[in-house]
Length: 119
Image (cartoon, rainbow, N blue to C red; front, top):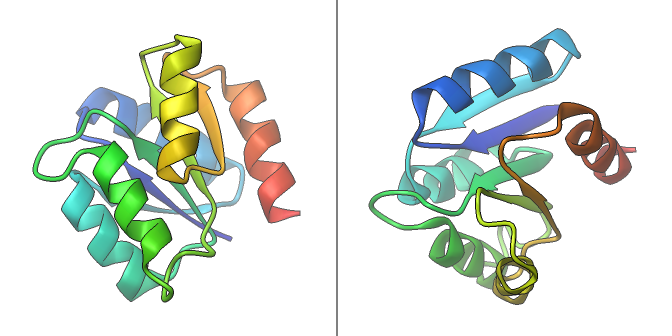
């Protein structure tokens, strides 16, 4: 299973991608929202982990654009953000995210969400 992780923070990218790889996932990396959209189209991942605070195109807009594009709209997106307010969760869901999780990532909880989408 292929997961695209869209994250601009190198430490977050490295930590989570290594943990997912050890679980057997193929992890693709993008560093901004536009690159994430491009990789969704070219690589067709099974799931996307989308940071919301990204350069070039932020995660809010990238998620909205992905869900509006029939070519990639069915790919599940889990929004990731350090903003843990209920309003942030609702904003992510309103943009089209299929689920939401907070940073720092609780790996066990996130893995459970990933597994539920990829089962």
